[in-house]
Image (cartoon, rainbow, N blue to C red; front, side, top):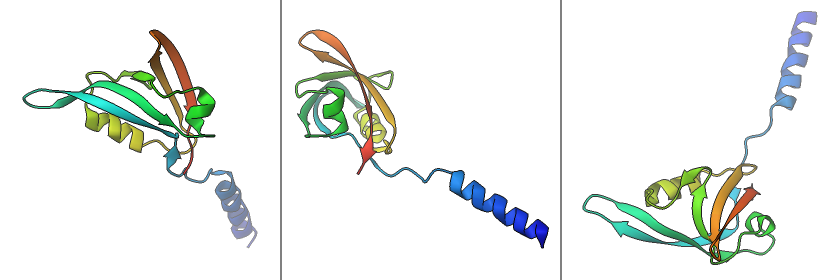
Length: 118
């Protein structure tokens, strides 16, 4: 009986210490992108931020409409697959740190934001 109670206590402790699974992430901005089409694929040309929602992680991080996203989590955006970008953005979970470099008025600006819960 003592062994059973000790095992139960250990299981309760482990369950309490494991963080809950993160939910879908929310960054709070929308983009418009233009594509370069080739015979076999469509590659991203420019990804421009069109809207930043009030009180969103993007607004708190300083992202602004008109910013052109050049790097997303270390990967070059221009020339990448549009599907890959959509997939990466859809995979963001609450609590994820999203880093990007944007071009604003001819200058590169580093942006880092923590995704919120949707």
